[in-house]
Amino acid sequence: MATVVDSSNPKSDFPIQYRELNYLNCSKGWKSWFFTLDHKRIGIMYLIGVTCAFFLGGLFAVLLRTELLSPARILLSADGYNQMFTLHGAIMTFLVIIPGVPAAIGNIILPVMLGAKDVAFPRMNLGSFYLWMFGAAFFLAALALGGLDTGWTFYTPYSITTSTAVITALLGVFILGFSSIFTGLNFIVTIHTMRPPGMTWFKMPLFLWALYATALIQILATPVLGITGLLLVVERAFHIGIFDPALGGDPVLFQHFFWFYSHPAVYVMILPAMGVVSEVIAVHSRKHIFGYRFIAYSSIAIAIFGFLVWGHHMFVSGQSKVVAVVFSAITFSVSIPSAIKVFNWLTTMYKGSIRFTTAMCYALAFLFIFSIGGLTGLFLATLATDIHLHDTYFVVAHFHYVMMG
Image (cartoon, rainbow, N blue to C red; front, side, top):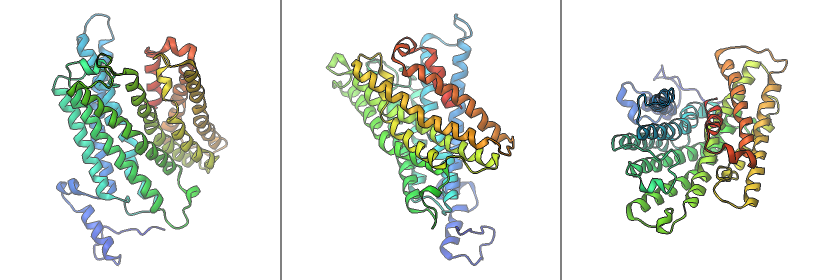
């Protein structure tokens, strides 16, 4: 069992190092939050920052939907619409969903589930939050310096030629990448080294398995995005031919680099949520989770498959038919571990004493919405239909059903 620190009694008999840590982390005053090493406080600061970014990205979404009420102009010019579209996607992806559950909820819950007093590297944890804040500041600067109209994917060659603040936004993405890597590294080391005696791998809560798989993606995939962003900055600043065909570069190479990160990033967003649902359904069904090992292994399988399917974003890019068929087959395969989770959740609820609390209602809604998102993905994995659905609102709907669930 983990030692519990009585923060209300500074003269308690707990070891002096615990009392000192408790004093440093929980001292009164709002200024203490800026230098806190307490994982719960850092998680709360992440939640506050992510919520502010969510309202900003949500405001852009409202402007987009308002503009689409009529074919005629309502609020935005064509260029303004493109900027709102880009900033909505970039803010929601890089500032909200990716850090939202792993960094915010993970920071609060992971040490508690391990019975640890904090994460393995508390100072790195605080540093990762400030890196997130610094990266967010670059996005706000891009908004003030002429906006961004490339789409959240920064596709070349347009992102090389546009006069908007691409370099500022890319520097923000680069900084946010370090925040994500530090968080993932911290979680992996914490899970490896700070489990209590007796908590073997297959006695860990499933939420920790989900965070572990997420952290693997963060530290392996994020550097690719950071390097790609820097290459694009170098190309814009010094006109070196990397991705621009006018300079001898290859724009399809940018797509390969970008999606090698950005498809695993989808699972950075969804895996922790799946871990939450695993815990909520088991507790509110008053049953042990059905197929614990299958759900645990499926989290790792999803992380592995996530690195192998980036090419399904590029079926219309001119890649060879053989490669397209391979990517299509692997994309169908990634649905298997996701389906394992859904069927095991349903089986857990079977003949359970279900309590329909607010948390359980959210979990049930997740099952319904995520299933729609997953099933629409099958149409996009099919070569014959993806060619017609590519770059349509079917793709937008598929993505939002998965993410918003």
